[in-house]
Amino acid sequence: MAEDLDTRLDAIYDAVLAYEAGRAAELVRQETARGTGCQQILTDALIAAMDEVGDQFAEGRLFVPEMLMAAKAMKAGLEVLRPLLSATDAKPIGTIVIGTVHKDLHDIGKNLVGMMMEGGGLKVIDLGVDVPPDRFLAAAQEHRPDVIGLSALLTTTMPNMRKTVDMLRGVGYNGRIMVGGAPVNAAFAEAIGADGFAPDAPGAVKLARKFIGAADA
Ligand code: B1M
Image (cartoon, rainbow, N blue to C red):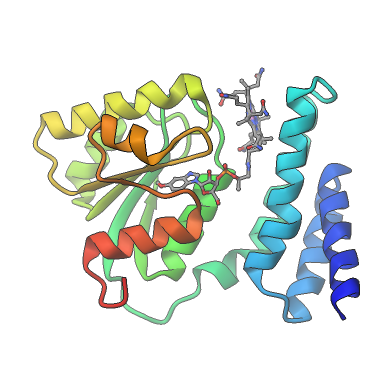
C-alpha cells in the first residue's frame, strides 16, 4: 500500500536525521527485502534526508559534527544498496577513474556515482576525496581510462576541477572528462573544457556509456 511505503520511507529519513546508522541500515535492508527499488529509497529517503541536513546547516540549526553523523547514517544505508546498485554479470565495457577534487571531502555522491557506474558495466577506479590534479594525471597514465569523472560539492573547490582538466589536457590526455556535484552545471563544464556534466548518478552512467559508445546510450 502506498501509504505504508511512505511511512516506511519516512522512518529511514528519520533514522538519518536522528544519526542512527544501524537503524538506517536495517530499515533499508527491510525495504529492499520488500522489493522497493533502490532509486526510490535513495531519492525519497536517504538523499531527501541529506538535503534536509544541508538546509538545517545553512540555517544554522545544526553544525559540522551533526552533518558528519548524518553522513555516516546515510553511508550505512548506501552500503546496503551497494550490491544491488553495482551488480552486473557483464564484462566491463570501459574504465572510469573517479574522485572528489582537491580540498573537497564530500564523497557520498561520488560513491553513489561509482556504484552505479559498476552496475552500468564500467570498471571503476576510485581515487577517493581531496584528490589533487597530479593524482588524477598519474591515474590517467596508469589506467588509461575511457572517462575521468570529477566530483565537487563546494563552490570553493570548483576551480580545482578546472585545474585538473587543464593539467590533463596539458599532457595530451584525450579521453573524456565529465564533472558533477551539487554546485556544478553544464555551462561550467563547458567553460572549463570538460566533455560533459551529469546532474545525478543515473545521468552520470548514461553519459559515460554514451562516451564509451555503448549501444543503448
Ligand atoms: Co558539507 N556542505 N561541508 N559536509 N555538506 C554542503 C555541500 C553544503 C551545500 C551545505 C549547506 O550549506 N547547505 C555546503 C556547501 C556550500 C557551498 O559551497 N556553496 C557545505 C559546506 C559549507 C561544508 C563545509 C565548508 C562546512 C564547514 O566546515 N564549515 C565543510 C567542507 C569540508 C571539505 O570538503 N573541505 C563540509 C563538510 C561536510 C561533512 C564532512 C560534515 C559532510 C560530508 C561527509 C561525506 O561526504 N563523507 C558534509 C555533508 C554531508 C554535506 C551535505 C549536507 C550533504 C552532501 C551529500 O552527501 N548529499 C551538503 C548539503 C546538500 O548537498 N544538500 C553539504 C547526498 C549526495 C547523494 O548528493 O553529493 O550532491 P550529492 O551527489 C549527487 C549529485 O550532486 C551528483 O550525483 C549524486 C547522486 O545523485 N554527483 C555527480 C555528485 N558527484 C558527481 C560526479 C559526476 C556526476 C554526478 O560525474 C563525475
